[in-house]
Image (tube, rainbow, N blue to C red; front, side):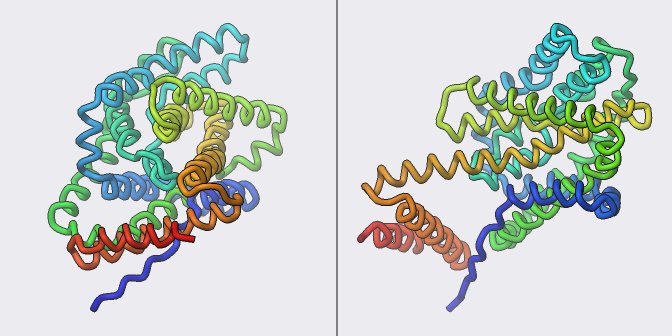
Length: 358
């Protein structure tokens, strides 16, 4: 007889927000985390590749909306429209350039992981991210050249992307082929590793930001407001772009809003002006703070749907029932993975029915 212990899932969005505030409050800790940034990015990409369902990924690859339309919008339409808006608004040239470069970056490598912890589709963001990253060595330098005198080396950018994605993809393929059972049993540990890596990355991105805020508080507030406005605007545009359920719309919005600005930042190197570097750092805050808002929206909608499903009841009662049903589902899935058979499907149905019974 085998026993399986199901641990509660960590509050991923809350941990990400905590990482940002720790990095701002403890500059020395943020500086200490900075050397770990490349390793954290690698673990995020690898963990996401290992946890994405193969069938869901294959189904997403057959959808032109995710393989053609969204990458074109992310890498071409968004930065060009933002460039036009920045020019018409009279934004100062350095910030206008930083804003356009941020919007020209591919989706963040951690977007799929964040989508997964929020209960959204993780295959769609991963497909858009991979395709956009393949386009980035061509599209980002061209857009940068078109809007200002910024020198980007497309070859160095391509090599950096190839090493990051290629190594993670090879390890993921080998692990799925030779250790699929171990991966299934270790799903909780993989999710925890990705969340921890996101926390380290959030800490590292805040290195030096506190000093910049103290030196130029007005510029810092402007960069922060602009970063949140850009992220929220693109998320809202993405949510309204395609038809679908709320979760599907939130997934599209998350993909459009969260960008891998660090990729462009590292390609600029030491040649980036201080104001551009400050804005790039500010773009990390909405990436790690807005998931709390998305999580709240998903929970509210889930609680309302559950209320309609089980009948009337107080919000506290319905929330308790919803948590109980989710816990039973997770337990049944864990037992099914440990036994390696389908005998738990009836257990899941029975426990769900029992939970609905007054």
